[in-house]
Length: 308
Ligand code: SF4
Image 1 (cartoon, helix red, strand yellow):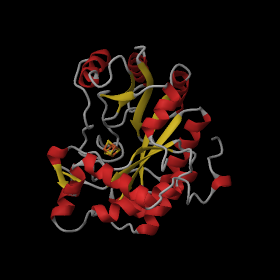
Image 2 (image 1 turned 45 degrees about the horizontal axis):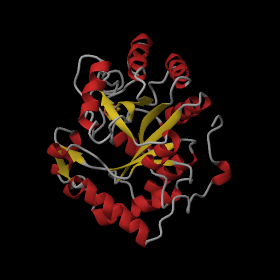
Image 3 (image 1 turned 135 degrees about the vertical axis):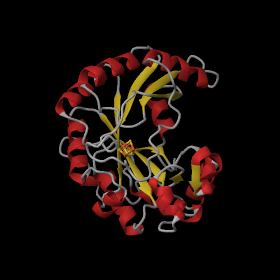
Image 4 (image 1 turned 135 degrees about the horizontal axis):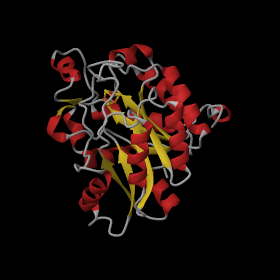
């Protein structure tokens, strides 16, 4: 196998196909509410992709399951808190939400997207406790290791916060997944591969590779329309992605190989809208070019954070 895919890893762990149910915890983000910033990350439209509407977590799970039940009768699910910053609430509220989400028997894991600077000790203690009941995954939007790009995209979180968060999560046995964006303004191949190498050696368990795409209603859309930024062509993206995959250690789970934005508000690149075709193109490229995850993983013996 050219790379360790999420579906393969889930089948190994749970012995069956597992679907994610996107849930809305009703939280905002410190990069939007004025605590860190007011305008959010430059590419962020705020919304999660397909979070189910509903008054409480149990209702949301029922509704979200209805969408996939035909494909997954009697199947297993991951409760996925995706929109905004899902540890940005009092710990008592988080406990209530997360406990309700893991309650149903068919929920086999809890996935929480958040910021590296929103993982205080009390939150970490709660996640550690929940992780003893069912696996807890934490997703962090690293996107880049370069301070200049992080400032441009208004991430509002230093790289040191990621170092700290990854170490603290791994010390508690929690699964960590990092997001990376390829094609960020001002970044060439060296910058992109430096971010990939950081992730490879970070101790993280999984990675989501995203293509930089421009959504309507974001400040990035203004940058794009003013001609100040460009986006990657598919012929540029796939070889870059292939090299990032080669740089990952063989055990790293590749959760995502491309972007998955809302087609209704996608401005560019339009080639990314046909996800099925893009994934086929990626797999064909991997096959034709003998791409193997781990082939260029250069730091084997140094891999992992202190506590990993
Ligand atoms: S941290 Fe996440 S939710 Fe907050 S502005 Fe950035 S991308 Fe959006």
